[in-house]
Every structure is written in C-alpha cells, then in structure tokens.
Image 1 (cartoon, chains in turn red, brown):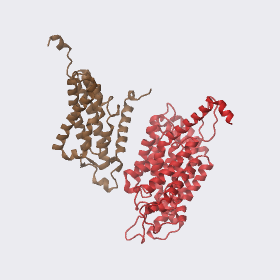
Image 2 (spheres, each protein chain N blue to C red):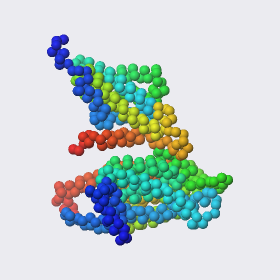
Image 3 (cartoon, each protein chain N blue to C red):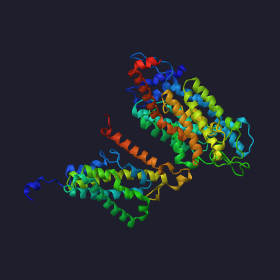
Image 4 (cartoon, rainbow over the protein chains, first blue to last red):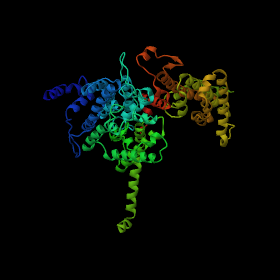
Length: 393
Length: 219
C-alpha cells in the first residue's frame, strides 16, 4: 500500500499544472482518489468532513449488487445446462456463467468510463463516480446473449445523451442504466425480447435442446397465456428462472436491499411504496380479472421479472428519484402502479418496470415541486392566522 | 428614374443582402436556433430521399410566398393579413403537391400529409410576418430562400444519419457493406423512430452551440 502511495506521489507533479501530462490531470486524480482518501482541506467556513464521499457511497451500491451479480452468474450457467440437458455441478454452472457475464461487465465499464474520462478531461472537472454503479447495473438488466458491441453502443449512448448533455453526474433526468436498456430495447428489439434471448444455449454440432424447452420468461409465458410448465412460487422467489442476468432472484435482491438500507444509501420509503403500488394495482386487476395476466395472484408480480430489482436498485437512484419525503412515497407508489398497468393492460410489453421507472423519473421534479409548494402554502396559512391556529390547538 | 435614385439602389448581393441568405444557415437557423418547424423534422427524416424532396418543396414555397407577400405588402389590410398569407402559402403548397404527385409519386405517398402541412410550418408564416411584410421583393426572396435552406440542411443532415444507421442505406442504396452484417452488425431500429430525430437535432444544436458560444443564453 505504501509503495503504491509513494508511486502516486512521485508521478503527481508530472500531472499538475506545468507538468508534462497536465492534460491528463483528471485521469490521475480519479485514480488517486479511488485508491486513497483525497487530501482535500477545507479552507473556508465550517464544514463537516468525513470519509464518506461520492466514491464511497457508490461503492456501497456496488457491494449491494454483489449478491445479485453472483446469483446471476450461477443462474446463467444453471439455465444453460438445464436447457441442453448436460450434467454439471455447482462449480461448472458458476464458471460457465462467469465466462458469459464477465465480458458484458468489462465492455460496459470500459466503454462507459472511456466517455467519462473524455468528458472530465474536456470539461476539466473531476471524474464522477456515478458510473461505477451504472457500469455494473447495465450488464445486470440485459439478457446474457446480448452482443457485446450493442452493449458498448448502448452504454456510450446512455452516458452521453442520458448524463453528459445535462452536465454530468447528479444532473441527469433519467437513470442512465435504464436508458441504456431502453436504447437496446427499441434499437435492437430482437435481442431484448422474445423467448430465445434469455438463456445462453450455445449449441455445438449434433447437440440439441431438451424436449419441451421453451426459454420464455414467466412474464412472457403469462402474456401468451401458456400456463403449463409455469415455475413455482419458490422457483421465482429464488430466481432459478430465465430472465435478464441480475433480475431473476428476489432473494438476492432482498439481500442487496438490506445492505442498501443498512448503509443508508437506498431509500426504504421508495422500495416499500413501489411494492405497495404494485400489490394494490395487482389486487385491483385481480378482482376484475378478464385475462390470464389479471388472474394471477398479485404477489406474483413482485417476484416475476424485474420488479424487485427495479424497486431496489433502479427506483432508489438518488439523482433521478424524488427528493422530498412525501414525494418519495408518491413517486414509488406510481412506479408500482404504472409497472403493473403496462404489464397487464398492454399486450405488447410483458414487462413494464423499465418504462415505468423512466416515466416516473421524468415526473419526479414535478412531484417534488408540488410537495414543496403544498408545504409552503400550509406554513403560509399558519403565519397569516396565528391566533386561529393557536386556539385550535 | 433619376440618377440619384440609381445611386441609392443597393447592389443585388450587397453585404446586407448576403447576410439575409447566409445568416439563417448558421447563427439564425430556424430549426437549431429558433427551434421552429420541429414537427416535420421528426416526421419525414427517416429517409434521405423524402428529406431532400421536402427541403426542395419548402425552398420553392418559401421563396415564392415571400416575394408575393412582399409585392402585395402595401395593399394588404393589416387586419386580414394572416388570412391573405395563408391563402398565398396554401396556393403554392397545392402547386407543389400536384408537381410531386405528377413526377415523384412514391415520395409524395411517403410524405403524405406533411406536404399539406407545409402550410402550417411556423417558419414560413414567421418569415412572412417578420420580414416580407416590411421589405422589398428582392431581399424578401433572399430571406425566404435562406431560411428554407437553413431548414433544408438540417433536414438533410438528420435524414442522412437516420437512414445510414437506421436502414444502412442512403437514397435507398445500400451503403453498409454486407460483410458488416455477416459480422453481426445490425441496423438500429431506434433510429427509425421519431425520438431519435429529436435527439439527432439536439446533437446538431449541441455541436453548433459548442462552436459558437454567443448562441448560448447565459442570462
């Protein structure tokens, strides 16, 4: 550790003003603060400083994503061997998934960080750490079979159009990871929907899939009204079902949620209100069921598809979510409602989580505005009629 | 005419007149700077062919409309000027529509209602109101052609990128080589959808404002 620190300090002068690599100061700075706590000293006014900066906060989210990532890797292998009918033990399944998922993660990080460093150098601001999370979220919300170049294109698009045009991390209106997914969804629909993309089959000569293999996600199966071979509640909860890499396991998502809430990084209000919104809407549809999608028990919605993943990791994004306390309840609740609406009512989209969150991202500032206005109005009334207020109390 | 009048007459392409022609291409662009006429940019730029035909149509309508209104400017009662302008534009649009139907029927079908909607293009009305009603025919003509050309080049630029990435073709001819497709390249379906036209225009605006900082509103 000390040797590394000495090395950094040695080359530092070359990156500072007047040095040979002056232009790359921001790149250097990013690595320096990534490895060590920055040596910033407050020189005006009184501030409280502690070791928590944005890099550390983002790291909490990355840690919270680890259970989902590991489970996703195993599930990729598990589904592969299930579909091909080959025998494999736990290690085989995990290693297979690792080999398939790791390139997605690497491509997403490399392409996204390249853009981040480029903009930081051009605009001369710190390299923002937001991408540490975005870069890991992107491979988790896409099918494992997505071609790598598409991942790169979508990541670059999301970072530039979703974030940099608005001024970088903290200024974006839409969640960049979901924007990348939405881009892929609309640009290359054949790779992001249908029954053939969720499981990596990779057949070689002479091999064939087992009889009765469908590859459809539970959501697609319900949308098509094919309820035979439907996974059990336990399978859906544990996540041994086809789906995007990280979204299948509700259990792993719950473990992540625990970490997010315990570290104070994710908002419990949003998570709970998304679940409440989804459950209530699901229940209402269930009462007046006219198609297969409406007939399923409402809690099925929570364990199928990306509902849990979206509620815990996507909806709680501190930049794009509502900021006020009451606003968070409204924002979360409406995400749940819109998700189920899209799933159940629109036959073209079996999954609605992505579109619901992006939709509510746009509305979050409006919600905040009205919450703040309502608060001002309430307090203004109190100021104008102080006595009346007093008497009533 | 007397000799004095001749002296005062401006040259056809005096610096002032040249500006009328070139300003709308750049720092006074109707789409990039005034953000007018966006609707048709989103609708008809899926292909370069339709973009080109639309651009030419608008140049024709705008050039003539500006001249006609400028000639009539002293006889139009101010209270009914809008309806007179609309009549002039509508007549010209009908002419253009008939010509398109006669010579490029397939493009005319693709443009469908958007040829008719040239009438409601805010750029044309804006120039008639803002320029032709108060200026002589020649400057009005230049102003009309300049603004239509400013509209046209953005249309062509957006159409170029949308057709290239969305369909892999330009003017209907395949330009992305087959080898690309064999290596797994695929056309971007998002490019064909209207939102991508908006984003493309946004990127053009971004690049322009980056190069010309005086366009950035810092008030």
